Length: 383
Ligand SMILES: *Cc1c(COP(=O)(O)O)cnc(C)c1O
Image (cartoon, rainbow, N blue to C red; front, side):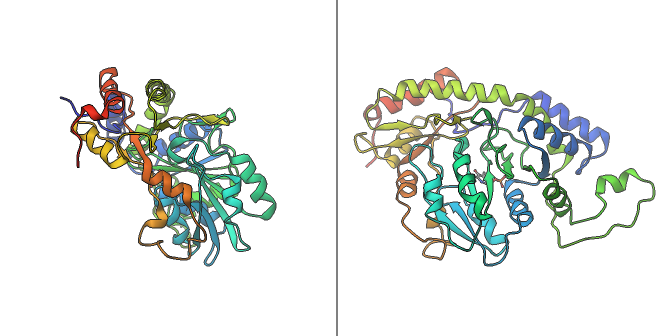
């Protein structure tokens, strides 16, 4: 019996050839491929500017720096997210303040954000959780007049759409991840997209030690001008090896999302007949790439989440517990980031399970997952 993973990246000969050609070229650090990937990504995501980074966490850090978030400021974030969303504000000395999410999408809403704002709120990080588009427009309508910058954490969002445009296109700053758990991967990697040229220029310098002359420019001259280090910067560069993979992956994004959506529809058709299971679906305001397709296990279902995970594992199927809740982790539990109850976050983190979805998932393997969901009692239960 083969093993069914929760996710497998879709990489092949084209990516291998792209990496080989970078190695043959002799230019492997941030150089011409990174510039080409940035341009292609900006076009695909309907963004004015794109700055490649080492990962999404560093892109979020740069977003907060260029937005002017400082020591003592508050940044409203969902607890229901990978912990990097909450950690990024702490890198600039700010306090992440947790907002709850809605059950339908697992995302923050204008109401949950409004409940967490104070006079000290300087920015909000909204997340397209698992690739489900966040309803951004009302959140910007709330925050913009108050001078609060809305940053979109679209780590999971490549290929998802909001009101007919790529997610992230409506935010002033959007951070992306190319970790293998996401739909589009470069091994490790990230991107910051922005509508503001001055923020793009500063982020571009900051990711490279705030050098006044980029390494790419310096190396293309025989004798270059002396550089100045304008402020304390970082090394958040991407390599040309990664960018070459990213360019190939970007070309496959449409096909990857189509395939994931087919898989999601097949799950939806089966799960609609199962009392006690609720599957994530497209919200009215957009479409999902189904980077993470989660199911909520209700009281009417014969097993709880942990029992269902073990039952699936017995059949060689690796599902995952749902999205984490950052407010329960040691850096934040019992601390100043928790201002009110987070009931929906707690319910979803306890009761959801992420189903296997990946490009190469065969119909037969998906059928074996569905069979367990349909008849969990037929499989030996754990005590
Ligand atoms: C994966 C993820 C991140 C972190 O991305 P890295 O590229 O691994 O730094 C941040 N936010 C969310 C919502 C994520 O899912």
